[in-house]
Length: 396
Image 1 (cartoon, rainbow, N blue to C red):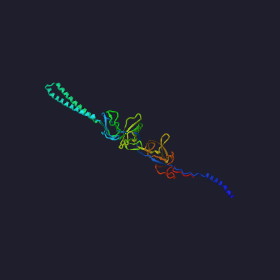
Image 2: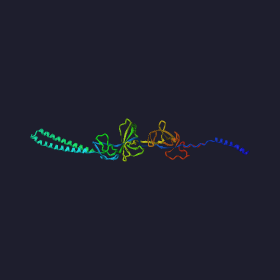
Image 3: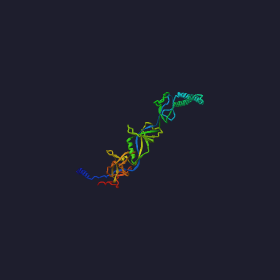
Image 4: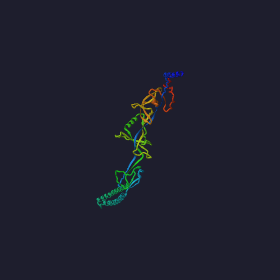
């Protein structure tokens, strides 16, 4: 029986313990002030770099064309090779042109002989005309014949020069330095002066042009920026990103901007020149050009991690306000510079912008600010007592 009585009292004890537990006051954990990292807003001089699309173009391009008619006798270059200005590329059969030179030389000799005879005759007639041994008309005719012979000599000299030039044209030289493409005419082909089809094309690729397209709206905005006191023109230096994403190591220089807007695309073409010693850049390549057209003075840059956008697209940041309380601030940030936003309104030098831990704060909430990148507080640590809301006492 004693054992039975003990067993009957167990449910009662358990019930009493449960009631006691329900009536106990819960222990409150201390409230931790969120730790946030901040950066101090400073001013600096910043180049305003933009990225624009572009295409490469040869620095010089020349089509090789024949200047005389004839049959190609030989080709003196390797397709795709680099040729020098004046180098012989093709040879046209010169037989007819050598004969023309010989004929012109003979005609010139004949004209010179005729001139000598007629000049001598006019010289003999002069004293005879003075004593009226011959008529003055005969003397006048002799003088005219001598002058005509002199003119005929000049004509034959010009014909000889033309024949020699045509003979020179039977060797077709390279008009510029550059890389020559495939030959469009073979040995034995008949070519003519003035034909529409070129024999080959040569392109000079070092240096090389890059034609960059910029919208007229961006150009207008740039001019407005340059009109302000805090923005000045930059040096016309440009860098390239190739179509495979790699960076071209040699910087270039922007030479000029066309003074007209393309009506079809609404863009203005900027032309830059880049050295191309290794031939990496080829005509027609798509590239991305990075260039600074202006420099902003007293510019404020803040990390992108500290900027958020409200539903209307307005940029906002949290700053450490009085008594170390978070305050939300609307700013104007329309341009990125690397991994930072360029702020043109809404902040002032010395402001502390929260860039770490923004997801843990709300407007007006007390925070524990530390410089961005600082080591976090150890777990279980409390907010510092030197600021309002630094820690809360545990509940009794």
